Each structure stands twice: as structure tokens, then as C-alpha cells.
Length: 587
Image (cartoon, rainbow, N blue to C red; front, top):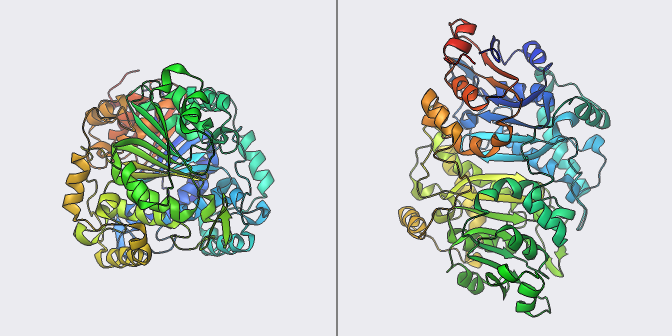
């Protein structure tokens, strides 16, 4: 009880937000008014107060899609809708911010002009996780490397136009949001100096984890250049000691296979796909690894990821994890995804590395293979990043639309409807597949926008249609696609969240009665990302404490927290009574 505080205040009041920002926070969860402009105002004022290595979560982004004008908790707003611009629809802002996260891979423009909102915000974002009805923004820690190198065609002019147009949208309401322009270097120094004390981090294995060590020993550029280990340590850990089927496209000379074989010691199969490397496959797959025990489960096959027949043969195996580190040609990446994602087992993970090529100035080439159509803000298939941004709108469709699934997809029902969430990391996109028990989350609580949604996916489907025959996409009935995806899996459930049903936070949420579990199943993602903070002295804040149900769960889960603070507005209950007695925990 002593560490739980409830304060009364309006998240739409900049002065109140400035007072909150005087405390350094490890985790902030916005479950407040759900009004998009309020969510944005809170983010731009409070994200700089998140300590390095911290996490900022915006729940209930469904309102960004609702038909305008509408209201949330009695507060009217407008400008929302499918495909609308921010601030009415804030989802688009975070999609644009991902392009800034990747900027070092395709641009060398000065940071003075490379931001959208503010240097203290844009340049401190490490990655963005797009979950059903929630967006999670990961803050860089003080040692976060300045990831990125210009390997292809620079797109400086296009990037400047892109962020310039985005900054104009922000400028329309920046004064209203009370954004203070800051010098980029001062913003960096401020963000680093603001933290004092123990490092609390969304990845507790960021420097000394088993996979990181294996990558360092193997010499793979997944560590040395890209620091993919930061994300793999989080998402692959649940599979580590399980009998996985793991495949990597782009085995090259086997350096990364060394790391995978060391890490997945109980794997059923580790398969590398290589193309154009003149080394005996068996020699590369086993002798290069130099480990007798893993050798039997490592296979290397020769094939072209641009060959649909080859991909179809690969798809006959059920895979738990697929990593595409192949040609890096955007169309090849897309062709591999549409043919292989249906072969990923429920609860599995598909990763596309090196999406930098989608931003390169066109025409260009990768590993000697020419391609065109890429560039900042270009359409797929030349830039496949935009496709996954659009697919996130399909992931959220049940929150703002009740249209039939027959017409609600972009690529194919066996793909679109099986995506649980999408993680946008520096130079990589990770797509999480639903498990067989994954619930069709969502209910249109606000203004439905069926017509706008149908136009949105229809326009996206037209883009796909231009090259769907070339991609060998076979149209499938949505229900058959679902049944097929469920029936494809036989055996032990391997899942990106090993605590999806019986984790400590899930149990606490069930006991508390919060709708974070009962309606939204946010527990699926919180179990993954909050676990590193669980036993640490966190400063945790939730905007929208309401009557304290979620505070019950947070207080039970964060037993060693320094402070758990709830912000409430318009609830006629004594703050202390709600914050302490409602929790019912003396400690």
C-alpha cells in the first residue's frame, strides 16, 4: 500500500503532464481517455521522462480508427478514421516514426532536420511493437548503439521530404501539444543524463545473454553490425530449450548457423538455405559449426528464395521460426513471406531482416541482384515496409469494423488473419503468428468505419493484385484458411509467449477483473515485455486508473516496485481508498 499512489488529473492538461514528467518512469501505460489527441499529448510530454531502457504503452488505439465525429468516455473528438492523418489517427504517426528509427540505413542527413516530433522523442525510440489495439514504444538505453550503415543507395532528398511532410502535420498542432523544440545533441545528452541508479531494461539479457554470446563467438553480423541480438534474446528465449524447427534463408558461409546451433541445443531441425556460395553444403553446415552434437540436426540446402517451386518444397515442413536473411531484395522477401508464412506453425515467428533495401534509392542492387521500385514512402512490392504497416490495420479490424472476413484481407486470409502482432525493429520486421487458441480480439465499441475500411484494404489489395500472380498467391476461402492453419500443427505447442495462459501477470489480471485480460488480452504482450522489470525497483505509472482494478494486478506483479502510480479523472472515489483499500494488500 505504501508504494501505491493515485493522483487526480487530466491527461489533456499540459501543466499536469509536466508535473508528472518530473519523476523518472521505467514503464508508463496510457489507458486514459482513449481520445487520440490526448494520447498524443501525453506521449510527447511524458516519453522524455521515461528512463533509458524503459517502455511506453498506448492502449486502446482503436479510437484512431473510429468514424468521426465520435466520443470516448463522454469526450467528443473528430479527425479519426481509417487512413486519416494524425492527430485524429495517431497510428499513422508511429508508422512514420519507424522510418526515422531506420534512417541511418538509408540516409546520412544531419539529425538537425531528420526528426518528426522532437529529437528527445524520435531519436530515443529503439523499436515499436504493434499489438492488437495497443502500441508499445521501447526507449533506448544509455548504451544503445547508433545502429545503421549505408550499404545501398542513399535517399537523402526523399527522406527529407518524407519527414518534412510529417513534421508539417505535427506543426499544425505542436503548439497545442506544448512541444518545445530542442537541439538534437542536447536532447541526447539530456536523455542520457536524466537516468541515475540501477539500469532497468526491456531486455535483461541485452549484453550477456546466451544468444548474444553465441553470436559474438560466431562472428555473425547479426551482432556486430545490426545488434539483432537485442530483439532475438527477448523473442526466441521461449523456444530455446524446445524441439524447434528453425530455418534461416541466407546461410552464406554458416556464421549465423553456428549461433543458432549453439543456442537451440534441443532443436529438432536447424536448416540453412544458401544461394551462390561455392562451398560444400555439408561442410558448411556441420564442419563450419565445429560442434559434434548439433551437427546431426543441422542441414543446409541450396536454393533460390525467388523460385516459387523451391519455396513450396520448403513449405512442406512446419516451422516454428523462420528468419529471412537472404538476398535482401524486397520482392524476394515478399515472395518468401507469402509462400512460407502459412507454413509457420501456430505460435511461431517469422522475421525479415535487412529491410533497409526497401528504402534505398532506385534502381539499385543487393548481392549483385538488381531491383527497382524501392525508396522512402514508395509502394510495395518495391518497399515492403508499407505492406506490413497496412497489415497492422487488418490486425485491428475487429475494433472498428464488422465487415465479413471475405473482403477484409489484403494478401490472403491464410496470412492476414493469422498475424497476431508485428514488431518493427531497426532494419528488421518480426511477424508473430496466432496460436490455435488465439482469440479473435476486438469489438467495435465506437463509430464503425466499414466503408472506409473496405476502401482501405481494397486499395491495398489492388497493389498486391499487380504482382499477386507473380508471387504465386492462391486465393483461399477465409474459413478454409483458418482451418488449414489450425490443422497444420501437430505436436507440442511452441509459443512466442511461454507464459500466455499461466503467467504471474495473467493470473493477477484475472483475479483483479481488469479488462486488460477479459476484453483485450494485453497480458499476452505484457508477459513478454514486463518480465525483465518484475522483480526490480520500478517506477510504474498508469494513466486511467479508474476504480483500481488494473492497479490490483500491477501491485501484485511488481512486488519490489519503488512506486506504482495511478492517474484518474472523473471517478468519484477517494484516491487513497481506491489506491490502497481496493487493492486489499497491506504490503
